[in-house]
Image (tube, rainbow, N blue to C red; front, side, top):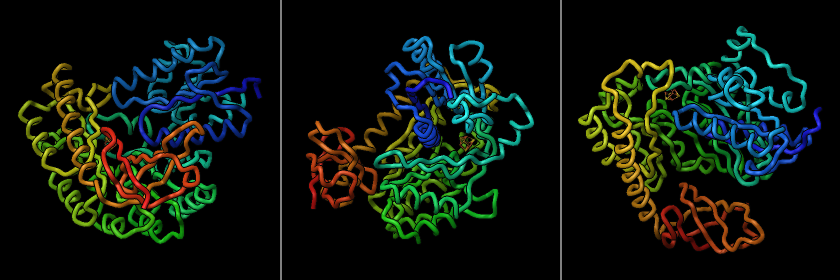
Length: 431
Ligand code: SF4
């Protein structure tokens, strides 16, 4: 093994990347590295990149140059989706030492121990597109991301993820339950199930996401389980009904909509119409009035005329979601969207994004206000010795704050929500 000892991580993008970084971190710790912050001088920098938008590309490249500025002799390793699609560019045009393609990213422990020769074998690359690499760790202190699925079979017209991550595949229900028990036994009280398209879990091995949900619901565990992003057409009603009565699964949903216009949904090659989304949200709210529902939206996609945007906006406004993750469209190489007209000007994309951010703020404010005087349970996160407050999330994903009580850190306590402390934070009292 080489002599480098300190390591810093920088993660961009989705929860799946975070899950994968956590497993790289665990491997680095096993190899004897010690972690430093990304803003500090390190011997090795690992940048887990993202390419979902051109901004994500820019941030990935910026992280490489920041790392180089901090240490001209550091080993800089780039992994993740931007690296998977731009390995050559990174090696030729940036100061990174190693850019990992899709097939190489699970070899990070070998890279870190200096024992891995990077392969350019295309056949191997194709095989890897169909292989599932598990990723989870037990090193975090309060919450763990558990990767249960990778890749996507959908090819939405604006998206490069299927090119960067390959086709949908997942691990078995038995492995997932074992990993949940392992993480739980290490003292972590909350797990977020992540993937690119977790609703397609099991498709490759004769199991289904519904079966996984049933199995988790029946699990004897105190660990809380949150579901990552699920496509509306894959979120079947039975799953919602199980979550509504489950002690293990939290009333917290993340359902991408992407556009509230049916015409745009067709142009974007999404596999549902907006009525399906409305129906799912209405069922969730009827069974769990205080459930948190996050929505993803992309604005300014080619083809989104002003009329279609307005139609989309009105629909979104009418849907009782709790928060909107707004993404501004940017052209991605190799996608079908590049052929679609009209192209929306950058200025207009920005303007629409701003409108939706405002709408999201209002929806989040309404959601938090409606929670005042309700009771829930908070998992309190670790806090520094010097901190006066402690923070945590309720079951329905409301960020809660309370004066610190050291004894309750990393435990779950019942609370009453008292008042709004700031835009995203609610003051609670223990009950
Ligand atoms: S469902 Fe569509 S947007 Fe989501 S990863 Fe697959 S192709 Fe991309």
